[in-house]
Amino acid sequence: MWGNGKNGNGKPVAAITTLIAEGTMIRGDVKFSGGLHLDGTIEGSITAEGSEAVLTLSNKGRVQGKVSASNAVINGQVLGDIVAVERLELAGEARVEGNVYYRVLAMAAGAQVNGKMIYQGEPVRQLAGPEPIPAEA
Image (tube, rainbow, N blue to C red):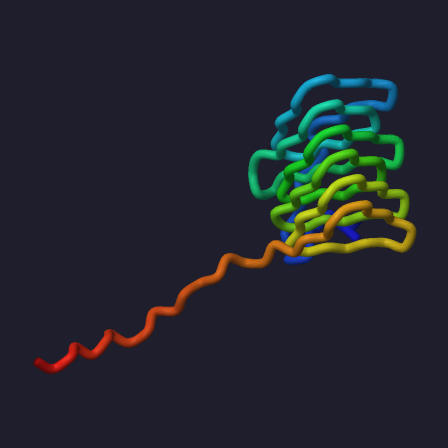
């Protein structure tokens, strides 16, 4: 789905700038910008900074904590809520135990979510209307 290096709007997605390898365990919160590919385990929250940031959680990866990112591709296990401000892709081996907040969602057959799926649309914009007519005295 993101294999062509572009998002749904035709904009390029962030290249992988950080890799957490299989067998690596981090206890604590992680903040990143750019692209984070996770094959290991994080016990703590993951927060992406920047609208172009992408988290990729492989089928070997595991997160125990909240995930907040503009864009995320999940194919591993998340024990916590996921907040995807722009786009979330749940691949076939994704296992989520928590609520999922998304704007655009792609979910493959086999992905599992044990929690609420909550659409987060565009903020309501109020159109400027005509000036109110003053009451005559």
